[in-house]
Each structure stands twice: as C-alpha cells, then as structure tokens.
Image (tube, rainbow, N blue to C red):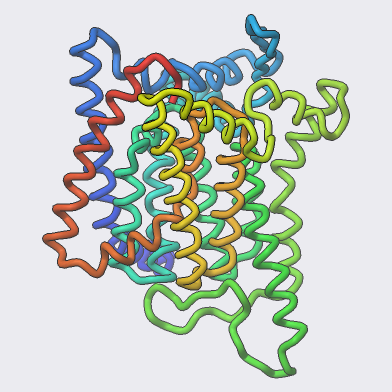
Length: 401
C-alpha cells in the first residue's frame, strides 16, 4: 500500500503543472462565459447543464429510454441515440447525493475533464516527455471548442476513458485497456476508435511475437519507454492480451445490439436510430454543405475557412504519421477524425466531435515544447483568452455546439 501511494504521489507531482494549467484555463473560460451570459440576461449554468444534448442525457437518466421527437421535415430524433454511461453516472450521483440530474452531469464533466487532461499528459509524457505532455494538455484546454469540456456532455468522459485506455495499451496493461475501451464504447459511438486502437495494437503485438526468435527480448509493438526513464515492463502474456481484446468491443456491441432488440430492427437497428440525427455518409453531406457556401461571396469566405480547417486536420495527421506516433494513437486519431468528418450531422458540431482526437495535437505540443518557457506561456495565454471569448460567444448563440 505504501509503495502504491508513493507511486501515485510521484505521478501526481509529475502531472501537477499540466493539471493546474488546465484548471486555470477552464476557470478562465467559465468566468468569461458567466460575464458574457450575464450581459445577455442568460444563465451560464443553464447553458452548461440544461440545453441541447445535456437535456437528452438528463432525460435518459431520469426517465429511461423511449423518448422521441418528430421534426417538421419528418426526421425522428430518439434518445436511444445517446449511449448510457453518462446517464448512468448522473442517475447514480442523484441517488446518493442531493444533486439534481443536471448538477450530476456537470460534476461528472468537471471531474472527467481533469481525468482526461491527466490521461493526455500521461500518454504524451510516455511518448515524448514531460514538457511535451504539459503543452499537449494546455493545447487541448485552449481549443476553440474547449468550453464543451465543462458542459454536461459526454466528450470529457469519453476522452478520459480513451486517453487512459491508450496509456494502458502503450504500457502493456491489456485487461485494463480492454475494460476502459468497454466503458468508452458505452459512452459514445466513437468508442469504436478505442476498440480499433486496442485491436490494432494487439494484432501487431501477436504478429511481432510470432516473428520474434525464441528468447528475443525485443519490446512488443505499442510499447513505450517508462515515463520515469527506466526500462519498459515486459509484454503481457498472450492470454492477458487476448482478454483485453475480447473485453474492448463489449460495451459498444452490447448497447448497439440492445437497441436493435428494443426497436425490433435487428443487429443494425442502431444505424436507423442514428440516421435521423447523425448518420454516416462518407462525408457527402458535409462536402455538399461546404460547396453551397460558394454560391455567394460573403458565404464563400466561410467555405474557404471550412476547407482550410479540414486541410489543417489532415495535415496534422500526416505529421503524426511522419513523426512515428505509436500505432494505437494513429489508429485512434484516424477513426475519430473519419467519423467526425464523414457524419451527416449538424455541421456546427464537427469541431466538438473532433475534441477527443487529442493525438492530432502532439505535433503542435512538440513544437511548443521547443520554445522558451516564457514564449510558450505567452502564446498559450493569448490563445486561452481567445478561446474563452469564442466559447462564451458560441454557447450564447442560437444553435447547439
């Protein structure tokens, strides 16, 4: 127990600058949101906890599944589209505390965002070192859509589970990785990205084991040096690796099959549920949306901005590949990005859907880590202010984030 507490204390101290910096950015964002909302006679807390998707989650927590809304165009929005882990946590907290369902959702988001920041630090520290890890966390905090990390949405919870699942894969903790992937699969449809990362690393590891000569002590794929600088632990046994791979898809598969059974539409019934909200069309609807921006001059500027944004995301992924990021990170980032860009959802939500794709930030984190401390603090400080102002403007708008 003493050894465990010592290791935990060491890890907390190592991550402390990243976590404190993250908390400072989030407090700044919430303060600006409160001031902006007050000036517009709105409640910042309501914007964070009781609008848009947050209402769907609290309805599931309070009343269960089965609620639908039929839009004038005939589309049906069902709360079966929302995965159950966040509502389960809201219901559990409401049962054991005086918190309302909305309050519980906000508390989960706040705690999960800190866990996500720590997970992002742990992964980046493991692969590129402590300074890059701090920069990665702060970059994630100052994203233009960073205010979503403090909303009663599932992005923070999912990112926390995904980051720690990837860390578990990179350090050879296969059952833990599988269990976290299972939970991520109960959080959002993009949990498939975590499953894919676990399976890709597991298959690569099995292939490496089969090709290695007897007695070869080479490190298995997906392993990284210990963050403390010592040698990485030896690979897990094939049985533990297989267990992790078997656990990984159970969350997403279980919920999708349950929805299919409940709707009577078979194993793929969830796709019909999602079709009314967030179907997958390979990017056709998004491409058409961008093309329509070029029908007039003012909107053409927005079209150019959208193309530039997509190009930036693709360029960052290419840099990730060139820099030799570990396979699990590349697979995870590619699936998250593909699902975000190729979904036929409300297009204003695409930046939010990319929020869990934190490996895309690692090239920027490395570049920032090479700057002098004073210069990197100045850059991050200016971006944090801009992010806070944009977040307040965004949430006070008419559409959902």
